[in-house]
Image 1: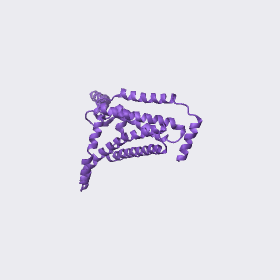
Image 2 (image 1 turned 45 degrees about the vertical axis):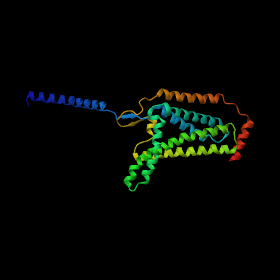
Image 3 (image 1 turned 180 degrees about the vertical axis):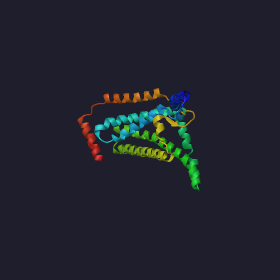
Image 4 (image 1 turned 60 degrees about the vertical axis):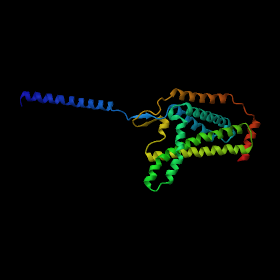
Length: 264
């Protein structure tokens, strides 16, 4: 072997690791520059905040419905739920397009046409064609019922709190509470069913506000500052309600407990 051959071999061996390092570095840059999956915003932060505060208020109010110990908490949550519904209706009138009540109303207006198409189904393929519009219609119907039921629920609760009527009024309040619970559970069940059928978490957009896929944002602005203001108002109301709550006498507490024990 000549010295030139030895020199060439040594040079090739020395350049091999350098080429491998360059390739690895190029691959790393390619991975770093790879675009993330496209997402788009479909629900703004204010709509999501109102949604979850309403869900929390109703759940805790239902849990604290019985028993004198949690009476003030129950009433406070009832007031909160009423205020949140008013805020949601105002947001639906003056808020961004995707949160408008008019969008919900247009979906509900499609109910007669959907029922007619459902009655005309004669094959599995025709049923499949009417299935997706039916999903959107049922979701819209559940949301509309939830908003509508909160009104008589909170009004009857206020009447019970001020003792405007007898036991019949408590039964009315309980009826609307149980009806709203049924609609909420049906709403959750429908979301779970659609998540399984579509193989995609249908509740995730209400948490993150975004869905995967290209396209423009339906919610042009997130309105995060307004969502923070809504949360601050709710927390401030809870603190004020607790600090200004009158101390209930032992006689009133005993009378309230006895009344509910007799009802049971």
